Image 1: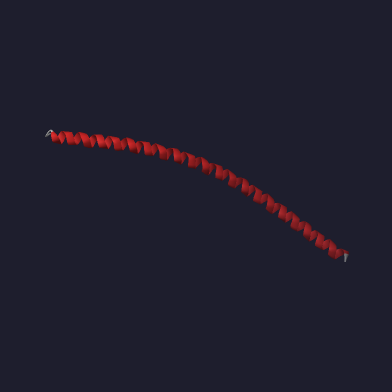
Image 2: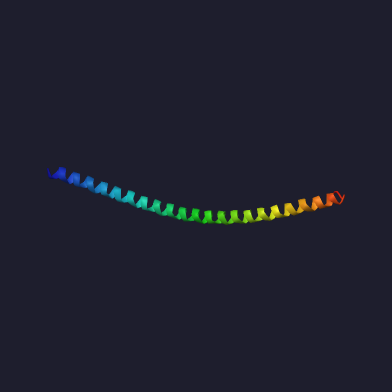
Length: 82
């Protein structure tokens, strides 16, 4: 009977060690995921900045296109064509 209890005790200890190892691995994975999340947040911020810059440039181009169209109309009205 003592042998059976000792075997069960050994199995429980082995399982506890396995669980500790799995827990450590999960903690490492969690840390890696947190690091990746931070990197993704930084990338997202950069993309937002780029998007704002592109919107500003698009507005500038729209203004220039309107100016060009207005100048072309004025030239056509004066009878001067490209």
